[in-house]
Amino acid sequence: MAYAYDDQNIFAKILRGEIPNDTVAESDHSLAFRDIAPMAPDHVLVIPKGAYVTYDHFAAEASDAEIVDFNRMIAKVVDILGVGPGADGEGYRLISNAGRSGVQEVPHLHVHILGGRVLGRMVQ
Ligand code: 5GP
Image (cartoon, rainbow, N blue to C red; front, side, top):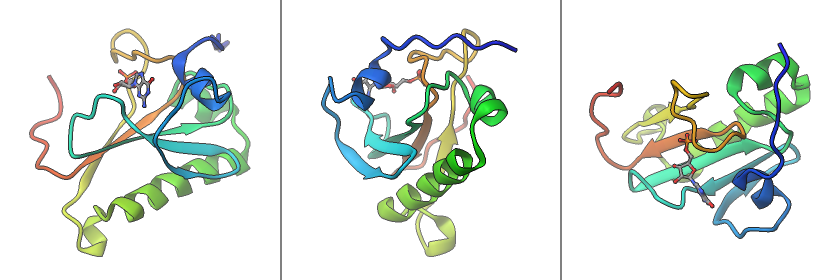
């Protein structure tokens, strides 16, 4: 499957330093920053630095190093936020919206990490 990546999307601009962001953590292949319109007290977006549109695009085409780095970044952010239930945090939710049915606003892969309150049922 061919994935078309639009390098004018807002997260590509953040990665190029054209738009500021509130960085939580950064690694070789990933960036984590606070959502500009948080839907919970903790709302962080984790993105790969590579040009991937959706999670399936990333899973299909990213290198092993990128995939490991991205997943470790999610674990790192959960740790920084202190929300990991295994570490006595209250828990959290991961969401990655994809495409039109997924109501994806920004066409650069991002995983939302939401926590800091009881989030309620997931699917609308
Ligand atoms: P999506 O619906 O694509 O999963 O969500 C995109 C998310 O990106 C939204 O939660 C929105 O608030 C966030 N967002 C959009 N523009 C910006 C921005 O310029 N900076 C930051 N930090 N977040 C943004």
